[in-house]
Length: 433
Length: 105
Image (cartoon, rainbow over all chains, first blue to last red):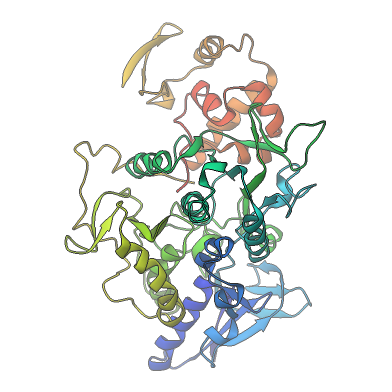
């Protein structure tokens, strides 16, 4: 008998899960049974997504951040290149678009999220990819590089349409880098940068929000809060400049708009009975990563609805618990419910500096040092954090995707080194999607 | 935290005026809060949204975001803003007696 593990998605979560499982089952049999691992994806382009932020500023190039998916997987892992039609959880079968069926004993949903540009009126209308861009995909980030290079002055608005989004700090980083970029070009005084967010501050968690709001002000970035984008008018109409129109009637005029569109789970999730929620995210136990759909279906990364950031670091930390639980499930052992929502993100702030934040389900990002009192500064600009961010790309391809542990950075959030504020009322408050 | 008297009953509110205990809420209180917020009459459509928000809160532990409301409540996002001009998710949550919908991370 062979046990079949099918993993949908060959991105960060799918790749590291497949490689970790492969390494385990190379050395351990499952009660004498052979384990076969299959990864399915609709294309063979694995994008290093943190690199997308750097493309518009000419700091990273297309070729550097894309590699073939299959090449990141151990050669004994099967790779199927085909779009997914649906998952039939009753029959434990994945149906592919070409009609092929893959039966599984354990399924892992790792298909991340997509951009739902069509859900915002006017977003992809006149002006799209001319003066209205996103940097959340490769085509957009590349188009934006040319648009920024030609930009000689005027109003730039960076707009998050709604949460949740991947890497919630990336739009802020874009503002900080734009401030640096136009300063370097000597035209910063001719460029007005505005950040329009649906949140009531720069970020979701109070201590980090206050720090990031001050940083925006320091860098001369205007902040518009509680802005819910109703419509994007990407061309001049009757002599009026292009603008964002909020549902509440507020208008934000622009010469160049950088919009982070709505995010949704993969479309096949919506076509699969009982698998996803209203936005095609997969309801998943936030501690064990088992889905609510069926005990043999697990999920990892951006595809889930767990109340953690949609970020590669979260996915990496989830991988350890997920793989352990798949092995436990196949062994008929109780699941390990230890995933704590750990996230760890560098926030590029321009001029060769970056911030670092480290948090989990219960503890918001706090000042201090990581991973202990002698480590990198938290919630504070430093050159060391910037170098950490640059070095991370190597770590991503060579350690993280291979499913190796990164020395000094464990799945569980380190408590030591963090300075708690006097009032700890926020620490126990859990933020959910 | 503070207390306020609504429809003749003392209720506990947080600093932003949201109910501390959603079980204290009654429809008569919603009518009072809506008036104070400039909504003279709660129409059937208002009630559809308020009841939907409470149902979601008790089922899922958090009130829905505007986007989920627009997809699932049967009222479009545009109409939600006409009904609750100060921002549907927050304003409707307050009038529905549930905590402020929590932001994402």
